[in-house]
Length: 315
Ligand code: TXA
Ligand code: MG
Image 1 (cartoon, rainbow, N blue to C red):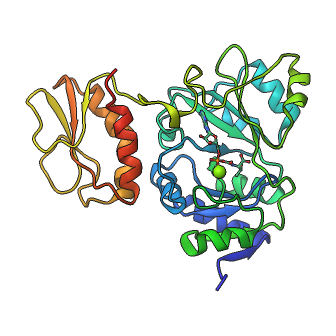
Image 2 (image 1 turned 135 degrees about the horizontal axis):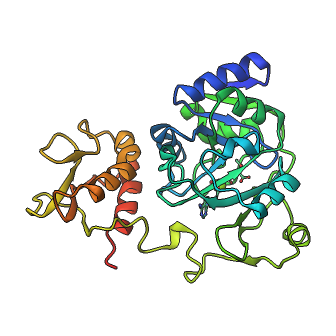
Image 3 (image 1 turned 45 degrees about the vertical axis):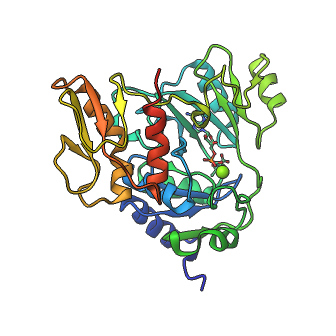
């Protein structure tokens, strides 16, 4: 039964906005591909995107906004970013920008990085949904990791079924291919993914050549390729059952510890607490090191361990 597919009436978009605000998942049409959306400012809601997609690691996600002003709270928008945004948005261009440090709600969607990735989609339904939700909407493609991206509501349904609360049926996607991602956090702009807007068009507008990073370790932008990623300042030991005296202990499940990712041993809760608790432990000046309890290597635990392995990688 495809009874979670909804026509794009304003009533249904209103209902979808309430779902987003309540921490639920809404698949929304965009001009590129359908996105699996959740409140970008809600760590737990963002963690549920990874669970639904069966994504092995917490990649940073694109936050979708409806106008540039909305991003001023959390992104540093310099002149180059502003001119690209004014030229190509709404549209299939995604910009990686530096994050504003004083905006604390996006650790999960940014995968603990100090960059934030945004775009304004060129789709009426998506824009109305974002506006009505009153938040930025985090959305990767609405498919299971590793499968073909969805370009219709039924594609989404076939892949995710009722793992998603609502699928807004905006018909076929105009572009059907993901957005072009440009990293603007370095002096020279770098393309991280070719996509819906041709690189030549962007180069011509900027008047500069744009390098293409395919995940070269010398251009460490794709967190998935880094051995050491989101490492705290303190050394971190993982799979620890007996912490040493000089270690802040982060627990999982019902145990004695300084911080607990999830007393109930709930993966979703643990995932959404992960980055913030690592930060707390790093700042906690009672002890000089951090240890963390074993997390079962299944479900979202796989993604948590994948992150922890990198955070603990010897530097
Ligand atoms: O067209 C699109 O971009 C679609 C629609 C729904 O907007 N979204 C999409 O999202 O394709 P996703 O998550 O499937 O792909 C985003 C890519 C990921 O490979 C992620 O690693 C990369 O962008 N990415 C996001 N933020 C990044 C960052 N701060 N630094 C480096 N890579 C980043
Ligand atoms: Mg994808």
